Length: 532
Image 1 (cartoon, rainbow, N blue to C red):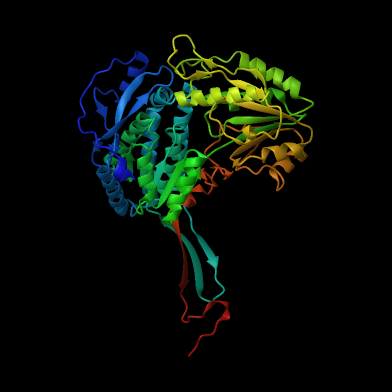
Image 2 (tube, rainbow, N blue to C red):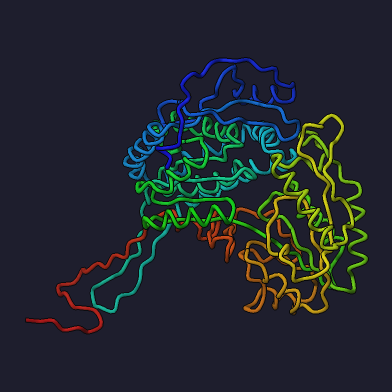
C-alpha cells in the first residue's frame, strides 16, 4: 500500500515565513528554524526525506510552524536496512557499556529539558509544567535503564537430571519500531528507546505526523551522543510520515517488535498486521478511566486530583479521568467544590506559567468535543459547567474549549463506554462499592482507575480479584500521572501492553531456555528410556 500511494516531493523550494516571536525563540533554541523544508528522515548517516512534507501547526494560535519532509518508499527501505546493519554491531556491545551511552543521552536531554518542554507546549499544546514534566519522564526512564543495564538477569533453574542445569537467557531482539501518538510526543518514545537501547536493539521511530518537530529535536540530540561514542546512528533512526509509513512498518518482516500507541481502532489493525506475519506487538490504546469517591474520602485530596485528572493536558492523556463515580452521601459537597475549581481555570497560552488549560491539539478534536456536548444536551444530561467552544483573547485561531462536567441521565448509555480526547467529565452517583466497581469495569477499556477512601476494607476489595480490572489501580491517587518505576499499560481493549518500569524490559529481548549437561551421561527427562 505504501509503495502505491506515497508521493515524492519533486519540486521542493525554499520559502520564508514570518513566525511569531514565541515560536521563533523556541525553534531557534533547538536549531529547528528553517527557511525551507526541514528534513524528517534520519538513517544514521544523514538527514534526508523527499516525500510529501507534513505541516507542523501550533494548536494555540493556528500558526504554521515548519514543514517537515517525509520518507519515500525507497528512503523508508533504506532506513530499515541501515537499522538492521546497525543492530548487527550494536548487539555485541556489553549491556553496561550501552548503559553508559544512555547515561550520556540522559545528560544531553537534561541540558535541554526546558527548551524541549517548551517545544512540546508549542507543537502539542500542553502547558509548560506538563511539557517539562514529559521531558523529565524521558530523563527518568534513562536513569532507570542505566541501572537496568547491569541487572538484565536471566535465571538458573534446577534440573531433575543429575549433572544438569537449566538457564533462561535474554539476548537482543532485533529491530524495534515505535509508533507514537501526538499527546506524549517525546515520553512514549523515551519509554521504548531506553529499554530497547540497553537491551541491545536498534530502534526506529515513526512519530505522529502532527508533532514532527518534537521527534526531530530528540533524534538530533540522541544522534549527537551516538556519533561522539562511535556508534552507528541507525540504532536510533527516524522516519516521519503518515499512515502509509505505519502500514509499511507493520508489514515489514525485518521489524521484530512494533510498539504502537494510539486509538483502539488503529491498534486493532496494527495488531492484526504484525501478528499476521508472526511479529511481536506491544499495544497502548484507549483509556476510559474512572475515579470512585467513597463517603470517608479526604475531599481536600480527592477534589484537586480529580480536577487535574480531568482537565490536565486538556483531557488528552490516555489516563485522563473521564468518568467520576460519587457516593450519594458526599456527591453534592464534592460537586460544589469541583465546580468552584472549574469556574476559575486559567485558560490560554500554554507557554505562560499560570495557564492550566491549554488548547486541544487540532480542529477535529474541537469538532468531536462540540458533537459530544450536543449529544449530552440531546439526551437530557445536566451540564453543570462548561460545554462551549472557547476563544481566549489573542488566541482566536487556537483550538480552545471549556472544561465540562456533565451528569448523564443513566448509567446504561453508550457514551460511558467511549473514550473522547477532550476535557469532559461524566458523573454518576452510587450507593455501594460493589456497584461502583461494576460501573468501573463496565467499559471496553482497562487502563487506569482510582478509589478515594480511608477504609482498608474498601482498599482490599478494590485491589482484589473482584475489584478494578484495569492495569493501573490507584488508592488515594488520581488516574493520571504515573511514575516510570512501575510497568505502564492496560487490559482489555487498552491492548495488554506494558511499557516503562517493572518487568517491561523483558518484552525487548528474546528468551532462550538452555539446558547444560556437565556430567558423563545423557539421561532423558521424565525418566524416558530410549536405549538401544
